[in-house]
Image 1 (tube, one colour):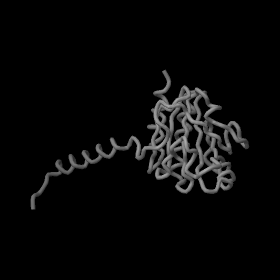
Image 2 (tube, one colour):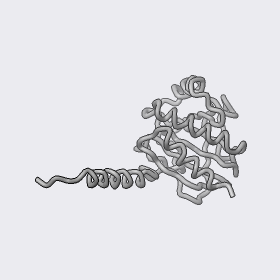
Image 3 (cartoon, one colour):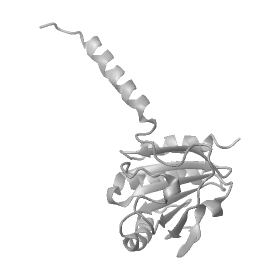
Image 4 (cartoon, helix red, strand yellow):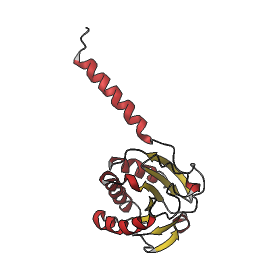
Amino acid sequence: MTRRSPLAYLATILLVGVTCSSARAADAASGPAKDTKVPALKVFDATGEHAGQYIDYAQDRGDKPTVYVFIVAERWGRPMARFLRELDKQVANWDPQAYVVAVWLSHDAAKGKEYLPRAQQSIKLRATALTVFDGDSAGPQPWSIDTGADMTAVVASGGKVAATGGYVSVNETLASEVFQALQKTKP
C-alpha cells in the first residue's frame, strides 16, 4: 500500500472544494430565459405593498430592479427563511427602488395565504412581499419553474430577465450570489 503525504491529501481536498464551489452557480435550469420580457405574474399579496389584494407584480414592478423568488412550499424551512431574510436585508440596504417578490407554490393556496402573514411576523422582511400563486403548484407557465428545485430566483430589471436559476439546497449564503446578480443590473 502506498502512503501519501499530508500535502497530497490537502491538495485533493482543495481540488474537490474548488470543483464543488464552482458548480454552485445554479443547480437547475429554472425560470424564464435571460434577456426576455418579464412574464405576467398575478398573485395574491399576503404581506407586501399590496397586502390582501391580487396583483400582477410583473406589471407593478415594471422596470424597477426586482428579484422574484419561487418557493416550493413543501420544501420551506428555516434555511430558506434565513436566505430570504439575508436577501431582504441586502436589497433593502442597497436601493429604495429594489424589491423582492417571493411566490409561494403549493397545492393548497388557502393554507399559504393563512401561513405567510405569520411567517412575516417571525422573519420581519422589509423589502419583500410574500405572495401566493393560486394556480397550478408548478407556478405560472410562462415562468418555466422547475419544481424539482426547492427555490428559483429570477433577477429582473428594465422589464427584462437578467439572471435566473433553480437551487436544490438553499441557505443564507446563497443570498449574496443572488444579490450580486441584482447589483449587476444597475449601470
